[in-house]
Amino acid sequence: MALVLLLFSGLAALIYEVLWLKQLGLLFGNTSQAAAATLAAFFLGLAAGSWFWGRRCGPMRNPLRVYAGLEAGILVAACFYFVVLGLYDRIYPLLYRQVAGAGLLLAVKFGLALLLIFPAAFCMGGTIPVMGQWAVASRSRFGETAALLYCVNTLGAALGAGLAGFFLPLWLGFRGTCWAAMGITAAVAAAAFGFSRAAASPTSATPAAPAAPPPAAPAAPAPDDRPALRGRRTILAACFLSGFGVLALEVLWTRMFAQVLENS
Image (tube, rainbow, N blue to C red; front, side, top):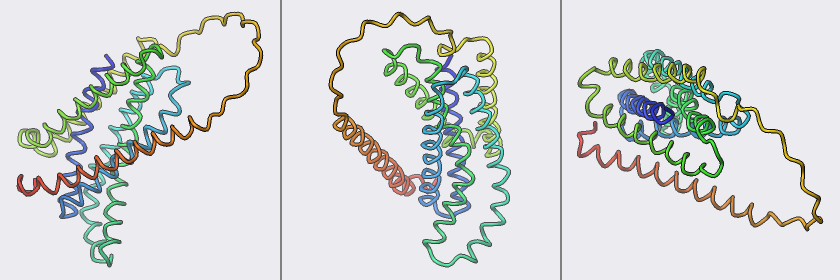
């Protein structure tokens, strides 16, 4: 059940992202800059949401209900985006005439993209940590279960990107594709809320009575945790550089394929 929810959640998320990229490209008049602004705002929201909800999902009594709330938040933020975007059509030409300098104009573009995309992306960033808290029953299988959840969510995202990029706008039009994505999000939120009422969270079960403590052993000298801390910092730095490189490549690929796919 968790895999199905995350599959459709990822599918809807990438439909939103492709639509945002297309609309901001029309608004900004530059596909590569729109791609950079969209991806930066999108992944900044994902990172902030993942950090925020990841720190708070441990003591949750019903993570699945919180997941339903996050999906509902995505739905509200998506509605906000497509409503406010109409105002941007009036605001942006005024800003373009008033702002002097390419650097300042780029900052304005990013600010507009951040205001529109960040709220939905923030909620999206919390979905996998919260669902993982509900789905992972034992610490020994944490890596296997977390990898499976992320894999299924990414497969849904790839499917959503392909559908929104090549098929759905032709079949449904832009507005129809928006409604389809919001319908998927609403269905995922409703299903998660329904399951949260029927299914017991693995973390909400009443803990067993603690066993009697073993006899106290002689105190050992405190280990030096500085090597572990340095290793953790190295891993975090490597993850940061990896994400930096991957997103930079994605923007460069957008520039390259725009020449082949007629800037679409």
